[in-house]
Image (cartoon, rainbow, N blue to C red; front, side):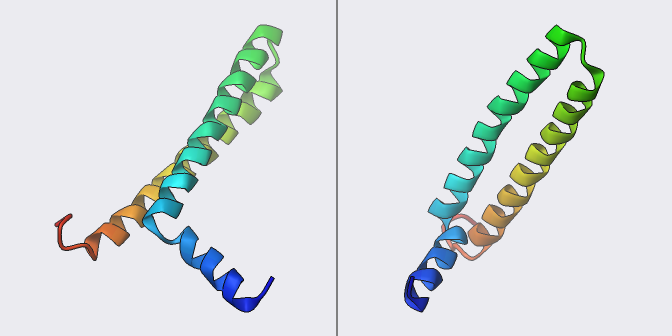
Length: 81
């Protein structure tokens, strides 16, 4: 990859569409966590349940960080206030 391609990719991550995509993929990860919780409860596996809870906390933190980034991008937008 060229330097300009990498720069464009990095710029996309910090754009509104890039942040919306990141939020979507992070929330999609929440589906995996919910499956993990159901499996842990079905098998009465406390260690797997603890892992699922920690993963859920990581997903929640990731979404919160992405929403904060989105808000900071919106602060620059005159129409968003």
